[in-house]
Image (cartoon, rainbow, N blue to C red):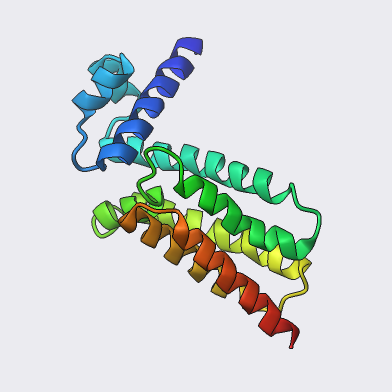
Length: 186
C-alpha cells in the first residue's frame, strides 16, 4: 500500500511537470516512466489509460491551486481587499518560473473536444473557482452576478498572461475589478 502511494505520487509529480511544461499530447507514458522511475507495467497498473493519469493530475493540481489561492486571500481581513487579493495571487503565479497559463484551459484546449474526463475536470475546476468568487463577492456586499464578471477578468488574465508571458494582465484585471466594485457602490 505504501509502495503504491509512493509510485502514484512519483507518477503524478512527473505527469505534472511534463504535461504542464510540454503539453499533454506531446508526452507519452514512456516519458512519464522515465521521469518518475515507475516501471511502465506499474504505471499502467496505477493508471490503465493515459486519460486517467491526466484526470488524476488535474484533480491533484486543483487541490493545490485552490489551497494556494485561499492562503493568499485569507491574509486580508477586509472583504473587498480579499476580492482584490485574488488578482494579487494571480500576479504572483504568473511571475513564477515555468508559468505556462492555466492547466485546465490548456488541457481543455488540447483534449476537451475528445475527452469527456478532461472536459469534466476543466468544468469542475472553473465551477469551484466561480463558487469561491461568489463567496468572496457576497462577503464584500457586491451585487449578485458580480462573481461572474470577476471570473471573466481572472480567466482573461490567465489566458493573456500565458500567451504573452507576462504577469501584467493580473494587474490590469485587478484594476478592472476595483472599478467594478466601485461601480457597484454607486
